[in-house]
Image 1 (cartoon, rainbow, N blue to C red):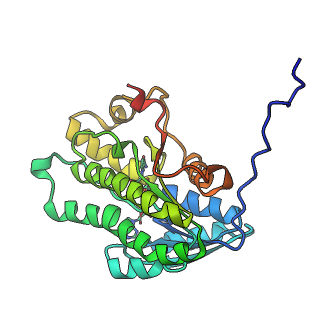
Image 2 (cartoon, rainbow, N blue to C red; image 1 turned 135 degrees about the vertical axis):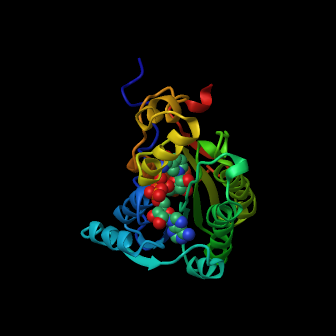
Length: 266
Ligand SMILES: NC(=O)c1ccc[n+]([C@@H]2O[C@H](COP(=O)([O-])OP(=O)(O)OC[C@H]3O[C@@H](n4cnc5c(N)ncnc54)[C@H](O)[C@@H]3O)[C@@H](O)[C@H]2O)c1
């Protein structure tokens, strides 16, 4: 008979980012804030980037007492040169900032399409570009791109968001191929609907676009394709990000970690 535990491998090391610098975009709220706190809990010096100065201040207050630190960095990511400069010297890069507009294509404002693509695809490119010289120089780096189920599947009325997330998937895979010889991994995490302000703001827009009352949006639109009928919490996404930065994931690159309650099982 096999002794209990005989088949168990070495125990999973916990995440220790002491001495590491991590940059998280969109850190003032939602998933980004949860990621910043999770990485600071692992000991990282977190550069928290967002255009929302007040949200960053709240985050810094929340981080008091954690082993790592949170340094607020107020920046609008449409300033692409500033974004690239901000990423210099970082060991871990979490591309998370995003925005959403729900409109049929024929009513979708072209300037908003441009902004969504700038913040959610071009800025990640520039941040990766800014981070790679240091990562390559030391032979270690972790890039985590907060994508979405919408990086893998489309939904009506989200042309800019779906296009940006599909593009981010391609960027992430390319960074994985180029980074592999230099000890740099690049992956996406792909949540379904997360309980954040971005989703709260979407309820009214979705109600209008689908012609149904706001109360029915959650069950009839957002959770329609999810086998698990609940929103995922920001800290659950942050834990997936932490996993991708940790030693257990050193062979994981160029992939997408899907946290979708069974949505894409259809
Ligand atoms: N909430 C969801 O259901 C969900 C699901 C899948 C993926 N995501 C992705 O997760 C990421 C975070 O979303 P969230 O739900 O936490 O949203 P959120 O709106 O709560 O947070 C997004 C953050 O990005 C910041 N931001 C937006 N534009 C910016 C700019 N130009 N410059 C600097 N900062 C800017 C905002 O200020 C905000 O703090 C996004 O990429 C989103 O697409 C969210």
